[in-house]
Every structure is written in C-alpha cells, then in structure tokens.
Length: 74
Image 1: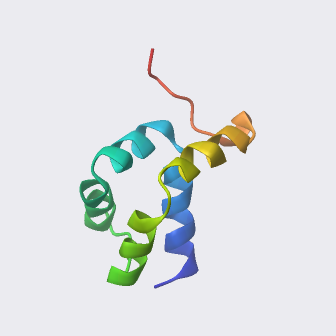
Image 2: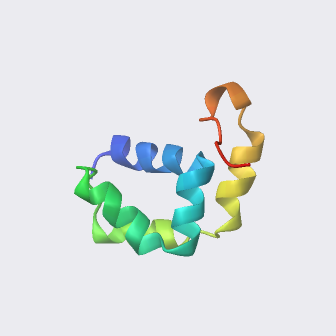
C-alpha cells in the first residue's frame, strides 16, 4: 500500500489515546482505521503489531509537543 497510509498510522500511534487503544488491542485499533478508509496490507498490519510496543511511547516523548495532539486525559 502507499507510504502515506503507513505514515498516517505511525502519526496516530504518537497520539496517546490511539496508542493506548492499539497497545491494548492492536487488531481492533487497526480495524477501526481500516473501516475509515486507511489501506493496509496484511504484511503492514503484521509489521505494525510486531514492532516493539514501547517504541511508540518513546517516539511520542521525543516529538515536540506542538506537533502532538493534546491529551484530554486527567
């Protein structure tokens, strides 16, 4: 599939709310994106799920907050 779809999913994984959903149930989180029109191959889905789960939180910590979606969690 397109590089753009993978970039969008990785961007979503930086978002705390989506990341929490992904970490608790990656198939459901990615399924919701697929239902909204994101195109991913089975190989891409497998690669996202196989990626070390702590990576996404570490990436989010390193990205300037101005580029992140604000968390509404208290």
